[in-house]
Image 1 (tube, rainbow, N blue to C red):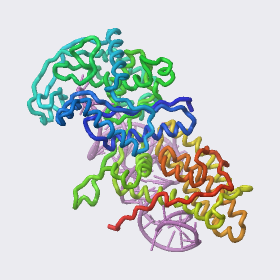
Image 2: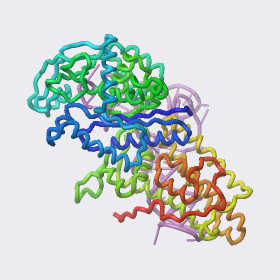
Image 3: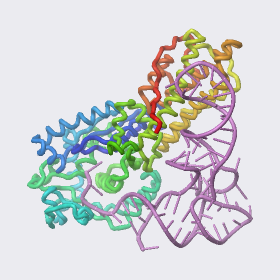
Image 4: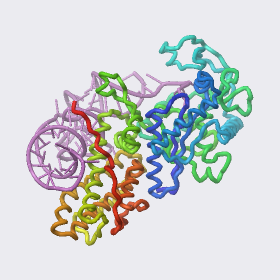
Amino acid sequence: MDLKFLVTTPIYYVNDAPHIGHAYTTILADVLARFHRIAGDEVFFLTGLDEHGQKVKQAAEKRGFSPQAHCDDLAPRFLNLWQKLEILNDDFIRTTEERHKKIVQLALQKVYEAGDMYVSEYEGWYSVAEERFITETEYESGQFRDVKKLKEKNYFFKMSKYQQRLIDYIESHPSFIRPEHRKNEMLGFLRQPLGDLCISRPKSRMDWGIEIPFDKDYVTYVWFDALVNYISVPGYGSDEARFKKWWPADVQLIGKDILTTHSIYWTTMLFSLGVPLPKTIFAHGWWLIGQTKMSKSLGNVVNPLDLVEQYGADAVRYYLMREMVLGLDANFTTDSFIKSYNSDLANDFGNLLNRVSGLIAKNHAGIIPESGELTLAENEIKDKANALAGQVTELIASYQVQEAVVSIMDLVRSLNKFMELQAPWKLAKTDFKAAERVLYTAAEGLRIVSIMLSPVMPNKTKTVLEVLNAVDTKPQWGQLRPGTVLRTHPPLFPRIEVEKS
RNA sequence: CGCGGGGUGGAGCAGCCCGGUAGCUCGCCAGGCUCAUAACCUGGAGGUCAUAGGUUCAAAUCCUGUCCCCGCAACCA
């Protein structure tokens, strides 16, 4: 693997409370970051908040707050959620921070000096009630009142200038936009002539933003304001050595809804700035929330985040990573969550720990036994376990997170099968040495499984490693220390009992 | 003919790029085991791989037509 890994999430807009979409992208980034950390890479995981703009200003006014006070009030809600979800990000950028604003202005100035900025009249449908321009599609939907054609002087970024260069770039860098079908979608989009991008708003109408350095009457609008965070934080314009170390980003995770923004607006901005493009922009799918069957009485929609309170962050993280094939949409239902929890986590993983630790406690005085000469069956387990880290690293490198989780769980199943075939509870009566060896093998397999699952379930796997006294060990065979005392523990994942319907 | 993705046993998916025993998880049925969170292990039933043609010794896999579902379609964070 590389020596460094920079992963970003979008910065989230603070006009609303965090939801499953925010949580999923952030968990995914966290899982990738943690996998890279255990592979030995130096990791920079960046996320944050987008705090400027019309909607934030309106939301603040509604509450009688200043925009800044409103943001300061909402930011902790995101931070609290990330804490609950065990997110281990390395920085958290808020676009109202001085360190960011300075760099946005610097970037605007550079693009201006490069001749990629010009003034023009922007004409579009303007909603007086919403105080913003609405799209043609929105206009046609007829859902907006007080709509009128409005002409306004604004600054434009010459995005069109870079159209051909971008097409060439996408075609010559197959892993730039992923998954593949999204790349084709963008190339299709680029077959039409690209327009230029309106990047300003007059302060007279909207003043909650970063002032344009070459025109005090304007603030910049979303694109430069928000997207520039990806380079302002790693040190663009402020710390060249640091920036050189981290940029380009290894992967920028986004939802498929903002693919155009990132693969076209953002990248042409980077062209203009003379900054290299990220190695990969990965657009994941959406979680479709199914209605619960029980909604008959309540008519409620399950909020997956509520499950965190009930079953813990690990179980939810596991489900989200295990269930979605990266890039495709997936369905979230309580039913499938419970099934996945019970079969994979309670029955297979948690129960394996119980079998192993229970037998060691019962027949071996709670002390991890010696291994000795491995049998054929044990060597199979050993080889499988030793191969796991490499296998998973490869899958993660190609963003096959689901496959990676499946391959780890496959070892869990193998271990359960191994236990069944070797039956150390029987061996304890007939061949004590063999029983010891078998349990060492099982415990050692469990240790490696836990390390490999730790990026997905940092809490519970830590418990397992604590039980085995192996917290700082590596996923290679033989690091479990015989002679150490097992710690006792409650069931890792208590089964969720469901009433039959 | 705007662009693109997809239709695989009851459910959810993989396989399709590089044709050649249809794989996985859940569910169901039978058995085993009894260390364990009524868990675990083994075996089984169940599929015209949307549909109609074509290419081929051979197609879920390549080509064409048809039906159906879903994204994107520019200021949206």
